[in-house]
Length: 298
Image 1 (cartoon, one colour):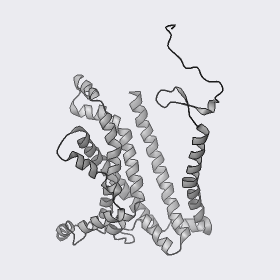
Image 2: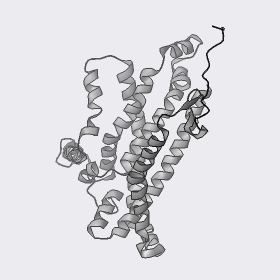
Image 3: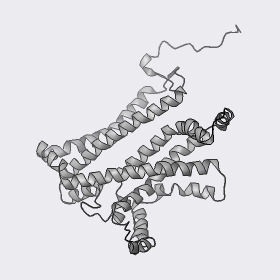
Image 4: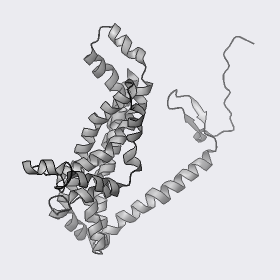
């Protein structure tokens, strides 16, 4: 016993590229089985992601650049893409606020039926998307429970972009709730008490203490809901009506082109969706890191 703290002696036989800094402390740690885990990662990433995406990207060029530009400038394709992305974006924005409210209620309050409500949040995960679409269309169609009440007032939900928005909101809400709920559960009450002790109002505590801590998880939930909504097909086709230039979404247009044996055209629409989605997700990833860095700096 020398009174000095014990320090780990680095093993000189372990190459530096087998070591990685801990993301929280910055200290160096050795990755066990680095070669095996790296090999498995590269194998699965290649076979499941990279190779299929490479095949998708290569397919549209069967008809050359002119064929790809013809699909890109087609008004029907542009309308379907715009409808898919804008409805998914609107649904994701609404889900951020609704998901935050639901996660807050489930985490901060105790009330009868809370566990049942918490379990019901995961229902869109387990429910087949086609079943969800049938349920929504039976509710909001002109002869449905809700649609029959709105139809006399000239309000149509089914077979319109509004119906698509409702379907995407339904399937996207759990992503936000499950992203925010663990962060809220681990948020220390002492931080809120300290803010109140220092004279912060409820609104100031919410916007300056709680919300900054939740922003990374909110961005994550928003990204997941948006990504799911852009590519959603099963729950939308039943309530959308699938009318060109009105309620036809991009995934349905891809299926139509496949049924017409226009594989290059279907791949072209898929590549366009992939490119736009990638740019959006990269931007959201940058925003998420910015909020995470701001939170760690505080």
